Image (cartoon, rainbow, N blue to C red):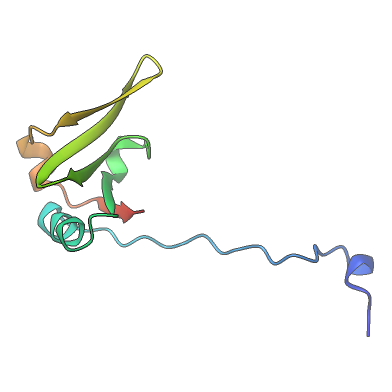
Length: 90
């Protein structure tokens, strides 16, 4: 049997990047309501630090401004509701 260190491979497997399903707003929201540990974000935002989540029964959004993170009640915009590039993560 060949020594793994002699073939230039790491002894630890490299995890595959998790593929994320792209959803419309209502599908993503339904998933967040069903499992409040989930967060929703848009591909268009290009920022996994900005995301929507449930806090109690209120939909909130976490955003970053000038290096400071803040959670706010989410006032939805039509463009976000009509978007079909929503992803989920925990």
